[in-house]
Image (cartoon, rainbow, N blue to C red; front, side, top):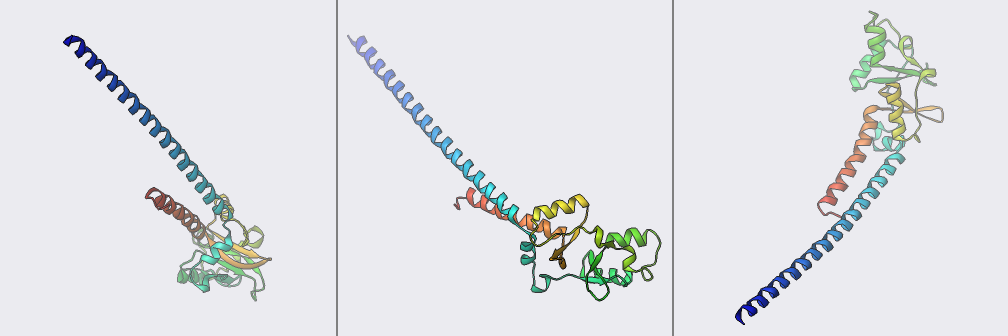
Length: 211
């Protein structure tokens, strides 16, 4: 009789253990499904934020870069020289203002004639043993007909693509057939980096529970 009682007790314990194991397995499964759903929602939200960021970047224009430039003097302004200036004076002006290019204006500043860059000086003066004080800007500049330009409405990514394809670091901004400003590859890259910096900040806030 006692052995039968022990068998029944052992059976009850085994049944209880099986039930607990089944309940725990169900709880884990339920938690896993909830976690998967949560991860799916998080991934969807992250994908939505990324799409929104990409769309915002695609909407950014050169006008945004010009508005964000530091200092009122930099907005809608550019450094220039004239076709009959010497290369020496042009290079000195670049050095004084720490820039790599100047817009070349026609005599009397009545229209854009072209652009002169550090590369023009190196390739067409220094390498050819010409004298910068005797060589005119008009002799080495990139003429207007060959210029790659953008407008204030040009998208930032499109401007970056143009500069990459043509291997140029400076590009004039022309508005209504008139010289409006000059931007560099640094301006364009800075705009893209700032957009990505905002995206990184949003992701960091999301990870730390800021949302």
